[in-house]
Amino acid sequence: MHIQEFQKMMCKLYFHRDTARGVTGTYDWLVDEVRELGEALESNDKVAQEKEFADVVAWLASLANITNINLEKAALGKYDNKCPKCRRSPCECAF
Ligand SMILES: [Zn+2]
Image (cartoon, rainbow, N blue to C red; front, side):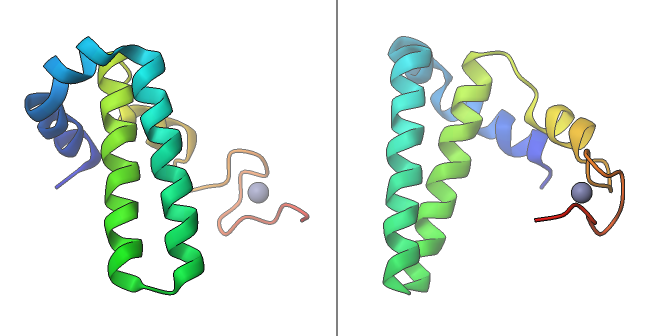
């Protein structure tokens, strides 16, 4: 499954609810899920980490749907097999 297909699946499942919640409310959920991912990373619980990664991707797709952003186009447009800053692969930017 490609990013675009995942985004379309999330649209089919949740667009009506995401639209009703709105951009700010959906963004707030995404932030909560990122916070939960941070907590899972500290736990070393791989099952919990996997679940939180899934939630972050799902809420990111929801937010992209209601803001009419094509995640795959945006991601691959910016990260097209090279670092967008140094234009190298792998990245050679200084830390
Ligand atoms: Zn770089």
